[in-house]
Structures are given as structure tokens and as C-alpha cells.
Length: 89
Image (cartoon, rainbow, N blue to C red; front, side):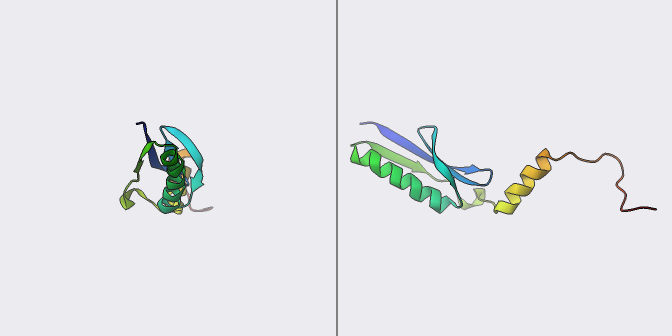
């Protein structure tokens, strides 16, 4: 019997679902929403006689969306070199 592995993975602005290393669906707001999508997809595999495994990371891996957006912005925005001035002198 074949077994499919579903992975819930942190995406830059939410959560994604992968089935056997192939991204399925879109980006979900929470781990729970991604789990629901994975469970629905897994139900089709079960109906066809296959086995499933669903992996979901723990809550410590979930960050607020603003924190993820901030990390992305600071990684791609250029930094200023030297002293910054607070205004005209």
C-alpha cells in the first residue's frame, strides 16, 4: 500500500501544504486552515485505498504576519551606511 505524506510548511505570509513534496493549494492564514486543506486532500487518498501521514509544525514555529513581513522587508531593503542624521542642522 502506498502512503502519501502531507507537510504543513511556514510560507512568507502564511502556511502552505505540500503533498509528496509538491505544493498543493494556496497560502493559508493559519496552521489550522492549512491542516483542514491537507485533511481534505488526504481524504481523497484514503478513498483510493492509500495511506496518509500529515506533519504539522508546533506553535513555536508560527510568527505573527507582521513579524514575517518585517523580516522580509529588512532583508530586502538597502541599509544606510554611516551615521544617520535626524534632520537638518
